[in-house]
Length: 276
Image (cartoon, rainbow, N blue to C red; front, top):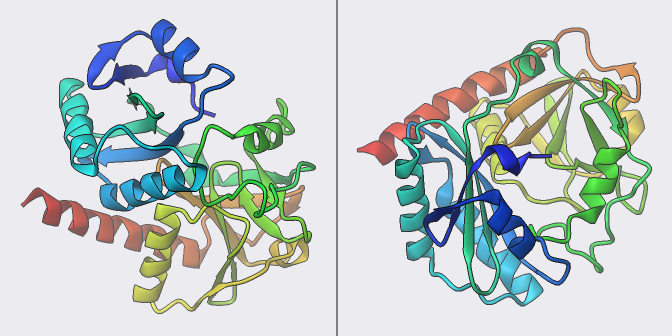
């Protein structure tokens, strides 16, 4: 989970202290929607897709956002410029009155990509889709917090949810992919349809790697040739093990490595196009 106390925080475009924002935004009766973003060279990755999901989340939970897409674009750009932002992590949150932006310089540790990460299956199951839609990013994040806390202080980096039917869903803040042969598989339901997840699926298509959105069991993952997680802040992170069972013979695997390279290639192309 992100430690927002180390980040720079803006309320409606003006810099504020964490002492001001936390009692306001995280009061027990406050409902908000949010998006996690990443900028490269001052350009926010897939901003329009993130804004699409933000407004969809707001509609789902009945929150009327106080600002338009255009206003949010300008505010994000201004705050990023204020911090001299080139490569940054950002968190955008809105309730019905205000917008909040966190900007942080920290990056994921390099060992994640070199050695891979260890996962465990969470005892906590993913919320039922007819009770708390996983497609919406909202302040109702207890499900993720409980699963994250299960790993304790162990070497396990993340917890993976099972859905109510016992299939793998997603990690607390990442989407899951497995590789069997040259086929890529990823869960289809009980997940947040990640912006980076979709970007990676397109990368796979360009690499000629078949992708199947389907139910995945723990048996499937334990016997996969490779596995990796995706999200906006971490891009593609290779998985080393699930529940103590090693996955594959090398980290990252050949398909994962190819997708990581394609990701960077397409990312640079997209950023160059938007900069011109």
